[in-house]
Amino acid sequence: MELLHIGNKADFDKVTGAGDHVVIVDFWAVWCGPCQIVGPVIEQLAQEHPEVQVAKVDVDQVPDVAQQFGVTAIPTVVYFKGGKEVQRFVGVQPKAVYEHAIASV
Image (cartoon, rainbow, N blue to C red):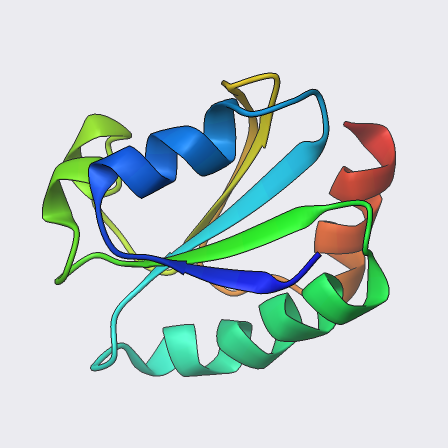
């Protein structure tokens, strides 16, 4: 699936609530240095795992979604399945950590 950039709460709800596949959401901001490290990894996951929907939420553009999920530090990567949060990573993680989570969710 293609990498989506979520611009509002309605889009977020549609992406995370649809179907029983895994959805990975990267909460980030342009000014965040660690987010710039995680970003390319998230993009690789989107390319290498077509069975997973990957989306990015700029916390400055869509703060209500970040607040709804208690995102207080970025980068925060949240995994959803069936519309529910099933895994969360805060800070920079190695790619292998994200891939292991895909396999285990």
